[in-house]
Image (cartoon, rainbow, N blue to C red; front, side):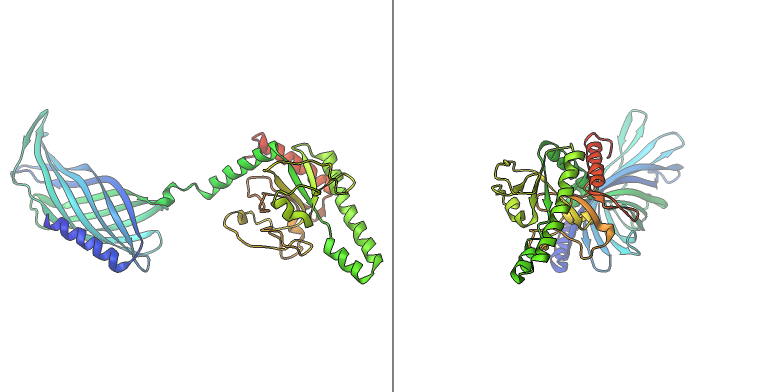
Length: 391
């Protein structure tokens, strides 16, 4: 009992002093060793027996670790008359793990094993034995990281004060499972897949709100200068671009209902203020267009980021093409043709990550696609993903 108290106090002292992260692990495996018979004259053979246990892991500096644990295991041997000698132990162990690399550790440390049962089995007959003792031993070996939460350990155990255990062979092989909150987290890949499936169902049942460029500030600036020529040129450019997008959706898109709004009304969409926001097929804001859905997705043509990982954990505020705050919309820093195209975003204006078909490139190699072509490809990919053809 004294040794248990010492281990507990040592564990608490280390955790308080080191102020380091502590993890928990379960392990199991096999013990290959030779337990001598009660009479030294009896010849016996080595056996493999099961072992299992648990340990606390203290993460130290320089990729090193300290493991304090307990295990239950059996050591046994069979003699030529098929009589099996069994000793069952409960052990306390402390092992220092020296990180040779990120995935390879050399281990060494003491172990104290308390005998809890000793018997001999001959057929169905079991007889209790005396003469076997608790003992102290030293372990040394190697530990390999197989996965983020799974390790393989191989160690040699040398008994110090138990003459009934042969010094060789005494080999332990075990698999340990690290138990922490990361074990139960859904992987990022699975998380994205679930998120994509949720959004394709949402889009099919609701609507796509396509954001059109309004050039409101640019036009206002030219109006202030009295430059009517540039005002008319900007309006003409705006209307030609936007009419092409509206016409493309009218002829090529069937996946879900589509509504159009200008980018200067982005905050209204974010706040679900739908009065005098949506435009008709003639690009005029039409109060008669009714919309009352709380869920929807956003579509947009233009230069934008295709780094769809930004959906997770990004808190940036960016500006749109008219230099207006867009409430978390993520835009490219440069107008590179590789990031020009049509993107689909969530209600926070983040591009939805793969595998959702959220981005249609505006170029095929170096040949620019028409708006009609992009919308047609978008519609086809959305249908395929919804029908399960794209995983």
